[in-house]
Length: 370
Image 1 (tube, one colour):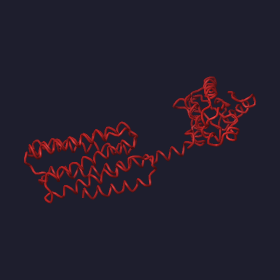
Image 2 (image 1 turned 180 degrees about the vertical axis):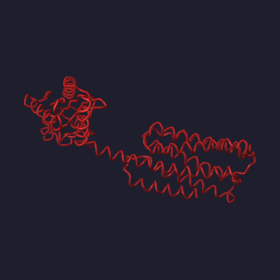
Image 3 (image 1 turned 45 degrees about the vertical axis):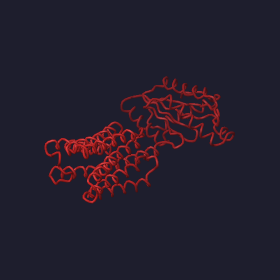
Image 4 (image 1 turned 90 degrees about the vertical axis):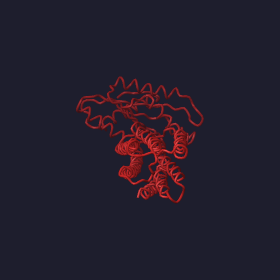
């Protein structure tokens, strides 16, 4: 049953990998992990057909590899440096020690301590990784399953000291052995479900990001930044916290497209957003309002502070030299701060827009408050 469960979960994970975006990394390793664990279970079933030492070593090697593949898949998902070299050395060292205490100094208890301890170390490292880098139900669920699996392994290692003998057979029927195999196999199923949930959470997060961010520049979409403005307006009406709104327009952007091509224009837009983002706090919001027009929301910012921020943005962009494929550009900025009587976001946008047109009328490449 353990082998069949592993095969089914591995095939499900590998099948879903083809339907998930390429940015969801780790699916291949996660799919291979339960299949390798299933291979170890099936290989253990060859006891009595092949030499016992060969069955034990290959079966143990496959189980160690399968548990490690779960860990490596999570590392890929979170963009972490791969640790396969370190764990490969750990697995090789473990197998050498198992061989020593199987053929040279036969002792079943020491083999259980070594094997269970190594598995527990891999599982604990996986659980700690998810605790450091993961959020959400799927990560917590998988981490809990891993900690449970580690607890089972530690209990098995401890129990061998007083329940087993040096010459105990690996497949000797006992309550402890039955409970250990059942719980460990069930934990592999839970971890397979957990990594599947983690992949699903990452897919949902990517779709949410695409729904709220412009694909070219990475700025928020118009809908997202307007929603943030509405929330800030509601907060102002309740608590009186000021905020400012900026509308930015890249000067003569059509000329850039006509003279240098739309690819250069795209590079200008991406570079523009990068420059503007460098002057914003984590609470601020930059959104693409339309074409070459952008909107910046500055919470907890009065008109004087907003003017200083806008001027730094303008000067920074103007000071940026040309580069290969990206011509020089400037920006005109109109800004306003929430005022008594402002009941709609459209009112602030209209004032900031009027200030923007005033900045253009006065020669562009300037900041105008309204």
